[in-house]
Image (cartoon, rainbow, N blue to C red; front, side, top):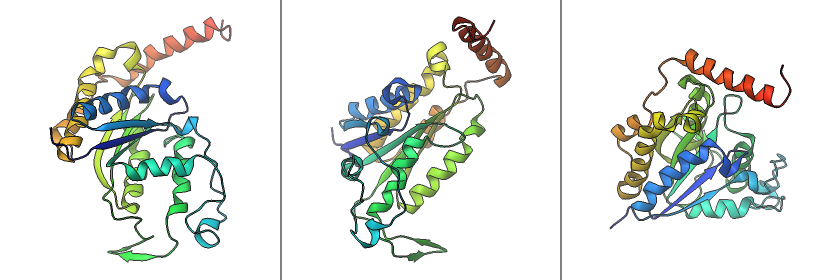
Amino acid sequence: METKLSRVVAVNGSPRASEGMTEIVVRRFLAGAESAGAQTEVLYPAKMKIAPCLGCLYCWFRTPGVCRHKDDHPALMEKLQQADLVVFATPIYVDGMTGQMKTMFDRFVTYTPPFFEFEGHRSYHPRVGEKEFRALVISVCGFPEREHFDAVDLHFKRIFENMRAVSLGEMYFPAASIMATEPGVVEPNLQAVEAAGGEAVRDGAISVATLERANREYIDDPRVFGEKLNEIFHGLRRHHGSET
C-alpha cells in the first residue's frame, strides 16, 4: 500500500502521560495511521526532563541553535523534525494547553533564528528547514460544552501559522470522562478518529466529513451531564472521608 506520510509522531501533553483520556483518542488515531502503513510513536513531555525557557537568548546570539539547558528537549525536537505528521494532544487546563506542553513549545525558540521576515501583513521568524510540516490537534476537556476549546483552538492556529505548518484539523472531545463511564456514547467519534488516521497517512489530508464525524456532538444536555458527574464527585469525597 502506497502511503503519503510514513512517520507519525504524537505529543501527548497530559501530566498523566499515558493514563489519561487524551491517550485514548491519540491511540485510536495512531491505530488508523498504522493500518495505513505508517510508523508511529508517542512522546510524553511529562516523562521527560524539559526545563522552562529562561529568556536568556543564549540560543540566538552566544550559541545559535543550542540551548543552555542540557535536557531531553533536543532529542524530542529531532523526532518532531523527522516526522511527516505531528499530532499535538492535550487536555484543557485553565482554558488552554497543559504546562508541560507549553514549556515544550516555549523551548522551540532555540531552533528559530531571531531575524524578522515580512509575509503579507505579518512579521515572522525565518522558517526552519525545507520539509513541509503537517500538524493535527487533539484535545479533551472535562466540561461538556465545546466552547471550552475556543482558546486552545486559536492558540494552536497561531502556532501552526508561525511554524508555516499545514494543519490537518482539530478533533475535540468535551465531557471526556464519558469515555470511561459510557464509552459507547463516544465510540462513533473514536471510529472517525481512527479513520482520520488512515486518511492522513494515505492522502496527506483528512476529509471534512471525517472531521465532522470526529467532532459529532454527543452531549444532549450539559446540565444533566454535570449533575450526574457531581453525584460521582460527592461519592468520591465521601469515600475518602472528606465529605459527610
